[in-house]
Amino acid sequence: MKLTKVLITGAGGFLGSYIARDLFLDGGFEIYSFSRSHHDILEQYNVKQILGNLTNKQDVLNALSGMDAVIHTASLVGMWGRYEDFFETNVTGTNNVIEACLFHKIKKCVYTSTPSVAFGSDDLMGVDESTPYPKKYYSSYAETKAIAEKNILNANSPEFSTVALRPHLIFGPGDQNLVPRVIKAARKKRLKIIGDGSNLVDVTYVENASYIHLKALKELSPTSKIAGRAYFIGQGPIKLWEFTNEILRRSGLGPITKHISFKKAYVIGYIIENVLGLFKLYRVDPPITRFVAMQLGLNHYYNHHNLEIDLGYKPQFSIEEGLDRLFTSMK
Image 1: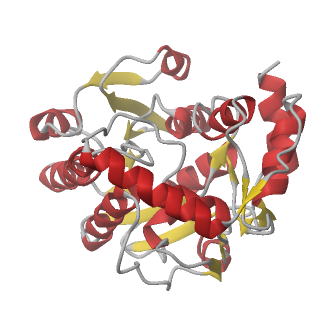
Image 2: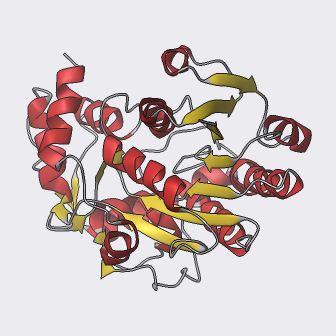
């Protein structure tokens, strides 16, 4: 049986490494990774690692030679930083992937997007993918991911099939971002409930996110329903602050009980952004920005009926099971 050659950008990252594992366990794929450095975790999945920079067009062109498909998970993630840095990785890097796919006549590309591409300044409550992109973004990450997503979906054609997946707030074993940041902030007494604490969100256990990437890769073709479309992925709605306090409880920390109004948090974020921008302090990790205030104080959960209909999506693991696996791995 001829194996499908799949290259994963960012395979050494949190989600990317799970996708590599699932492709390996499936048995039908010859797996390649493209990233800036070697990752030991990928050796156990027989991943052939190609080193290079996503923003270097020739590096990407060389890496994608001979591939049948690409899963593009690599991106620059952050709540603060220089717009140009986000643009270079998220937009220029993605455009390099698209151009290389077209040059090598690669048949399909699964793109890891984010629900943040649909997030402006309003609550998103049970909306589906017909929700338009907002007119204004409050995060360079969200804005550049939206540009990249549009480019990926616009590239869809009978010769080159594309799909964009938008997993929300991914957590699980190996997470170096979401849960560790929450625990770190709580230990430093930097966490306060923004608003009344009743806001609802989607979260996604990492193995569910990986599973749907594999399923999308297999289903994607010029005639499939998913070609040229974007899909929200999540397991909500749940109360964000109840989820946060459950993480803290399992970490042996007390619950967050102090509140700050959404308006006050937003204004503080606005001031911090302006001060940091004025002095060009883009490498600072600010305690809050306007985008963070909105993420922590507003509702953002989605209707997943399109994903269920088009890809038969059902989470393989519940949120509770995901938390159990996460904290078992941390012992």
